[in-house]
Image (cartoon, rainbow, N blue to C red):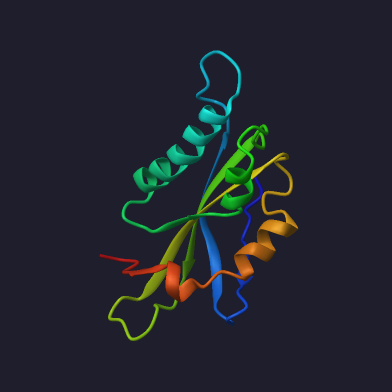
Length: 138
């Protein structure tokens, strides 16, 4: 078994770590019929609901969402990744000891799990604006 440690340094200088990762098939819930604009829109909407059920109440971000919403008639990439990233440094002056953000991305291939374009988009996020502080241990 290979254990993967992924650390990313954001443009702000903050280091974040991939803490939890879930992969699923984007169209796994499609019971019958063709893929459609309405179906694609529904899939993108349920990604947010799924993320909030997994890591409630962590905030979340769908990477490249505008690209998918811009043309809902196109087939979405085959795989969906939902990942919780942590920074072992809180945002601002907080009595919490870490911060976290759930990120969602779609990909056509399983390997690499974090393609270069996804890493570049992650590096550019404003962690202090999007993430939320929490305590690692209760």
